[in-house]
Length: 157
Picture 1: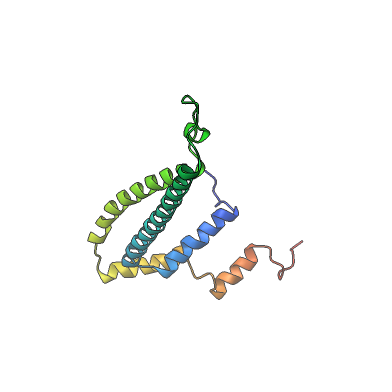
Picture 2: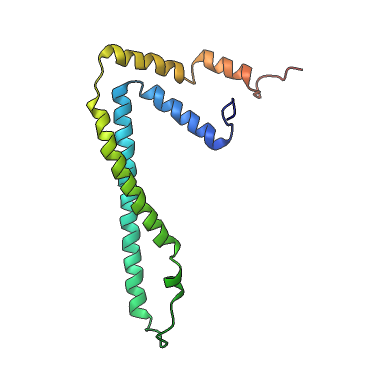
């Protein structure tokens, strides 16, 4: 495992989002609510897309049944029946995702049973500030300029 974090754009975007979520939600209660909202939004969006794809598929099947005569050769098999198309596979994948999200939701309900005193919430805030300091903080910006080559900082030679 590398000692330094990955620098690829996807990982960098993840690190920024991770830190932002810690900065903006530095308490246990806020993290609980954030996790729940993220799960619910994922379920809602995936479910709605699945519904729309099902409607589209039904309309497409209905139109195909009305306009295409039955094959004359009873042994002939349509290409579509041999290999599922991408939309059907995506619908199956979305059904699996929704099933997994439902299971996660059932497990996550348990995290709402946990309540901590204000002193512990304060410790969450302190640790959050250490884990994900404000990226626009003047000290942080100065440090970033020192550690990374930037156009406004001449190369040291």
